[in-house]
Length: 280
Length: 241
Image 1 (cartoon, chains in turn green, brown):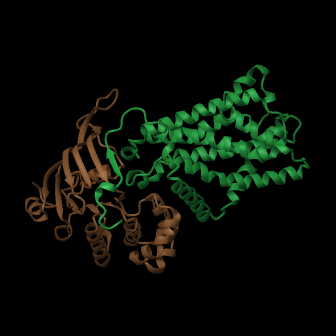
Image 2: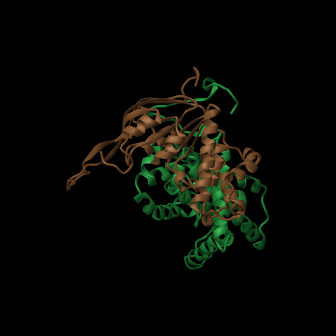
Image 3: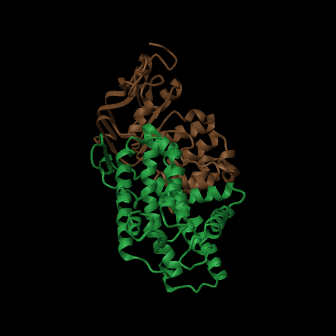
């Protein structure tokens, strides 16, 4: 503080009751990006420090999930994966979906679990769910290394579209932000939403082409499947990795649905944020 | 304080919570709700360079007032003007992660107060010197005592060089030596034109530290002024009016 500086040149904050439209709240994120990184780093650091198995969990989850479904759906139910080895086909889906699901799950409890960061100090609270999504990226990156190994093992030649895979993951991350922000607000208002979470994510996975190709659906249903905001990014990731065709119209529809979720999540969050300190 | 704009202006501040109404709840539909006023029409002007103490029993509204001033919760009615960068310390260990070391938590704490990593690094020697927890700073926070966490947290907040420092009753967790260091810091901050608002119960400490006291009673500002006069009127923490 400069000596003798009068209170007149200091920044002024006016606190009044907040009503009505509050926007998306993204203007606060840029000046507070330092805290966003600090929260991401905190989540990653603490998670990998206290777990004995550390990074191994990031390997075990997608591998075991894929192995189980390869046996049940690939071997027993003989799901046809557009000519691809089922394990490889399913793993691309499980990886993209797993990133989404763990990010959304972590984000949903981020506000309720933040304690004093919500009730004892002011920060832009939308950073909390966003940081959860950021921290989930590390698990995904570990899985991506596994995917590379699996591709090599199956002798799949890598298509040029692989360079687009990060964009597909960014898409997954944006949908995860939308869903995570929305759920974190809902869970803080109504705790029961938390109990429904596992069920919700499981049901959502089953209507998303994670473990089966879209070609398994009757042709009339396929456009409907793209109204699911996760169909587009999962298909886009798989298409980038395996070089399969991607229906552009469907992707636009799915991106539109994702955008609606993202905007709705941010608006809803800003709307209930003012009550968080009294609820969390 | 000479002619400068006041650090805090509070005009007709109300904070109202909807709470479950006492008595038997209706069997069908939602339980009856009624308004509980944590703050009732508070008017207060805190000049810059002032150390303002908040006194009053439990539930008088001290913490609620600090929460409104630190922007944690919105006013229900009225208006507050704050001039200057604000740092608030309403709880020991807010934002501390038990698995991270004291040092890692210092950086996290800086970020929570909006301070960039390199700014924290610049001030790190001063922060650690002020906190005086020695080699404990490399231990996970879960092994540190609440007094040590307070030392680190206060030290970070102090080195933000805020214009306005808000403290809830947490200096009671400090040992006498550190409490004295905090009191010194509060006085020097005020001497440089900063403003401190703190809640407390300890009459002797309030008398020696504060330039003004505000007595809150059931959300109403009963008295505001020179510490001696307010303490003479205030029946005390344990007393029943």
